Image (cartoon, rainbow, N blue to C red; front, side, top):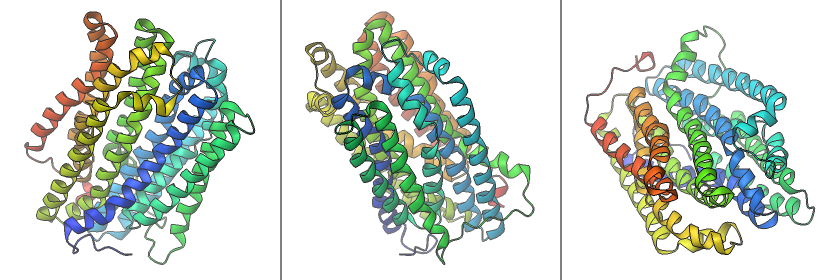
Length: 442
């Protein structure tokens, strides 16, 4: 199905994009969730704790894919809305080159310095071997290319292919997780291999887009300028910062929990952080459904259509976040049993942690939408402000300060307080005058 992002009714366009976008982002999160559930139940508590220690490396891979994928795809859509096809193609070309270069750098650095990196991330003698087995394979970097390709193909008006590709890879990942961990007893290496193979299938299916007649993602190497790279960094950096800061938050929380609650606290937090991937995935799906529509109409200066899509997105995000917050308040132990066979100490610690942490999901969903809205309308400083507050400044500060007074409860409170304060700031930023657009909108 083809869409006319400048003519079709905005609300209908949003909901036509919504299901494919949510499906794609949800199944991407299932790559991690399937690993977490299978690892927790099939290998043990130390293994899921080690997996949580490796998550910051995942954040780097996804963050790089988001940096060049979202940044380049937004500029691609704005230039397309401006009827500047050559500029759109150059943004795509430069984004591909940057993503490939960074993946090679990560691959080489990871294999040379893996164990020192894992020790910095908090791996102990008890968890090191689990972490090494998993991280060695994940560093191949396929997750970055999957995220990168999804962004561009969705913005090239093919969200259904993105959905099909990610669901296919996710189903294969889950099947291989079970085979590698249970019958074949391959442990953490098996879980990582399943993720890489599943994501590889996703990338292969996504690449079929380039053979379609409607494909506009064609490289153009003539007249490439360094400023294209600068603009891609500028407009994609908030997405990169979101992923990287998520890794930093996990790192800080792990260290604080080791200090205040030991490895038991890290195990409980691994349940919370993995649960949040579902909410982040849904929230990203909502935001990414709106992003290509908003960016294209922004390029064409159709402000009324932008406002209609934004209103639909905010309402949908609020409903999604509220539903999961209520679910955590009402059924905290259900969340625990999904991931592990809990011991008595975990059953004592987890319910309060789940109830407090899940309160953050309302603000989280809305803040993610505001971030993508500011990116799509070429307001990078506002987007980065939201990312910095919720993803690093407030969350890390509160996680370090609150436990001094409230012990481990203060760590569980840090996230909901950070998201609530950030949401108030985001609402204030929305009311400020729009920033002057860059070259992509001229």
